[in-house]
View 1 (tube, rainbow, N blue to C red):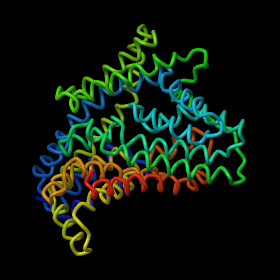
View 2: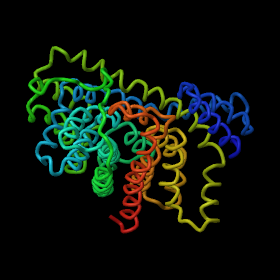
View 3: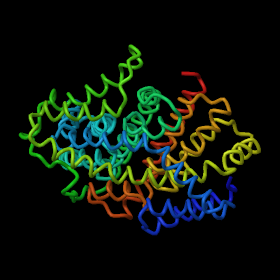
View 4: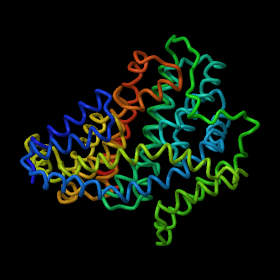
Length: 421
């Protein structure tokens, strides 16, 4: 319906507006509208494609909205902080950086958004860093790398969007990237240890008062209560591969949140915690509507066929489209969620038609979305810098290390596909 160039120009306009600090959802909608016109579509055709694309995002949006119950419960009850603290204490000061990375991985993997996971772990990490003399860049790489590793195996918005676009089970997609996540964790431990050897002064951190719980250690729940919610989520999602009884994330994620609230004895604050969780996912949900609109234009353009032709000209296999599209679009939008969503909606059909199994394609694309997602025109860059009181200039110096972690998980995901695991 639309030309490739028109779709690309529309996407470029949306990206340029996002870089100029325009509201991302509106920027994407405007980019979709312009792309449709420039791509040769009439007004009714353009609007129809945009609405169709946005409608295709509704299952993901609904699941993400309900996931806010779990995210809010884990953060506001102190469960996320307790899990992180327990992991760090268990491994001890000798493996402090590995413990920080693993703690961030676990907190992200159980359903906390990656930026909130970093902010949650940051107070504990900074306290350890001051005692052990570990520089802040090393601490931040440990947290960002651990968060990226956990993100590819989490029930977070990007995973949900990829699973819905490719029509695969969420649990299966999470399990598919376990090996890449472990490889990313190993790379994180190596890079953070290397940075720790550099002579960098560990400065004081300035924390965003709204994001972390900030609860005193005595007010944190016991570990069994903190882990109760995530355990319930994992158990419910695991029923499908174990016994064929499917529990949709729409049910499993909020159920885990309610269990977490009850186990921590905070049932009187259920409404407050749910409201907090909703405030953290509503922005992502609105963003997905915008990405759906632009994906509707891109998906109905000649971009799919042109990308496959380009891969053939470059003598690259068809499966390369999965990680490459994840890398390019997450970097363009500076968002794992937006990049993975647009790439999944646009290229899922082409990848499956090319003979790439849907689950493997989704896993590779998802992993690719974690390489250059932390660019300065996105929120993750600034949220993680603020969590440790780091300037923009210093945060930029850390960016390549996070990209290496994402590249490690992506390469590992491709290798897993190639060897047939």
